[in-house]
Amino acid sequence: MTEPLQKMEAASKLLELKNIDLSFGGVKAISNISFDILEGEVRAIIGPNGAGKSSMLNVINGFYHPQQGEVWFDGKQRHAMKPYQIAYQGIARTFQNIALFKGMSVLDNIMTGRFTHMRKNMLWQALWKGPAEQEEIENREFVEHIIDFLEIQAIRKTPVGRLPYGLQKRVELGRALAAQPKMLLLDEPMAGMNVEEKEDMCRFILDVNDTFGTTIALIEHDMGVVMDIADRVVVLDYGRKIGDGTPDVIRNDQTVIDAYLGVSH
Amino acid sequence: MSADFLYLVEVILNGLMAGVMYSLVALGFVLIFKASGIFNYAQGVMALFAALTLVGIQTGQIPFAHLINAIFGTNVHHFGWQVPTLLAIAITVGVMVLFAILVERYVLHHLINQEPIILFMATIGLAYFMEGFGDIMWGSEIKTLDVGLPSGGSRWLEDYTLGWVAEGERYYGMYLDKLDMVASLVAIVLVVSLTIFSQYTKTGRALRAVADDHQAALSVGISLRTIWVIVWAIAGFVALVAGIMWGAKSGVQFSLSLIALKALPVLMLGGFTSIPGAIIGGLIIGVGEKVFEYSIGPLIGGATENWFAYVLALMFLVFRPQGLFGEKIIERV
Image (cartoon, rainbow over all chains, first blue to last red; front, side, top):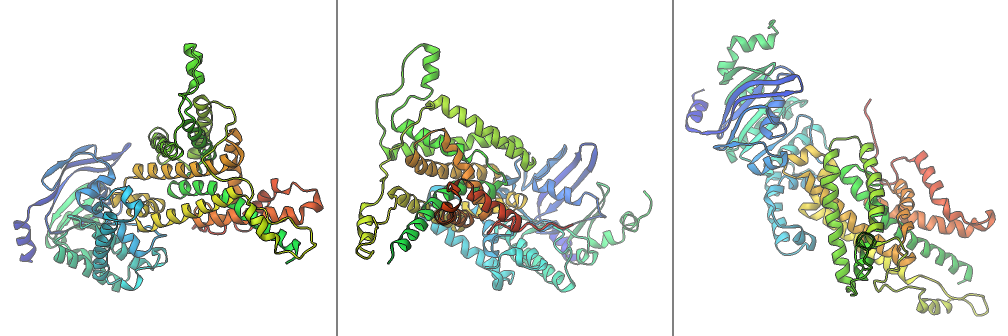
């Protein structure tokens, strides 16, 4: 229990959200939420369905632009940018409903994760010689490491559309890792998995956090998992923040318990 | 070998090469449809426009000459120089890239997240706009396109095959059009290089990624707008190749834009999302219509080439709507 606390004190803030407001037309998805994510921690975002968790992730990821509030990332205030530019900032993510390139092989899918690291221009690529070839080989080597790390060597050449659900989730994690992100956003990485697959996924997430020091923000419904792997937890309900702290604090928080057990608001 | 057999071989070979010409047009459709789900009605007009531009640049025509003359009362038509073929082709490629950028910025960008039918309508508008624009820019008279491609039948082949037939049989040798042979070679090179490009390069992977999933593509840092420009530029380049081949064959004129109609049955056969499908679909249609005309044609009064492809496509629509190589559409209910 003391270990995560020490981790928190030592680390600096990688991401800070200040008074975020997000609405779609008249529907308020997020109102006045502030929290931070420290460098190197595993931060869980939990809450009942429709609490605004995925919207929150989409704000961090730049898919949604909040009407109010500030996003600070890596020490700088982040202004509205195009969704694809966020990847260049060092944020990678996975999706709630797996978003892989179904027609492409596992290898190719993970190679697309290297997109931001490959800078050689089209002309070289068209000639398929010289710098572009060199770059392709280097990145391919890196991708092979990821494949080893996630223990998916056997399915390298398989089109992902043919893989079972659990493995697809793992490939998606691989694609996000390939970008060597500063921060990894996982939207329900364990949804729909059986116990064994969940254990594997937990292991990978913790390994990523330990080995690469990647900061992780994840949304998850399985409370057992959340309490096990998260350093700190933020709880949302109806677009508001109702709790924030270590798993132990959250477990005993009356507001959080009420939200989950459905006491009238 | 009997003369009848050799004649059938000739028909099939000619069919294959005609098929390659259809495939060239179909290829442009597939590229854009795969990457953005848009059925680009303007593909045929793009081929016309590219061919017009190439001829115009090559012969040193002054763009918008009629307009300039009408407004200023001048009488200018030509700069008076000839541009070397390769340079003219390079400039035309540049024009098609510029065209791709303009289409993305002023048409596609405003229609993001619209229904496919809306985008389809936009390309119809684009087709008519380009047709008129091409007219104003380069004039509407029929032009001959000469990029130094060989034409006519191959005498060598005729003489060579003459010896295959027993003495005394009526046979004049096999006729194959040299231009068709060149077109086939060009098409093969084009398809092989496009396939390699899309399989083994970063941009190629990005193209396939965007075709599969927009959100995921954005999340790994791929800009959809850039990809669309690239796709339309490649489609423009393919249109130029098709325009050169068809233009050299039958002159650069308005009816060139109608080759798009010939590509439709090819697409229905091969599937809208498959590059190999476009090629094989084209070959099947090319051979099918030639052999049908040769064997059944005389029995029913000929001219079957006009409708055979469409009937074949119709049959495919009934029995295999996704085409030979297209992705099967499975919808969960």
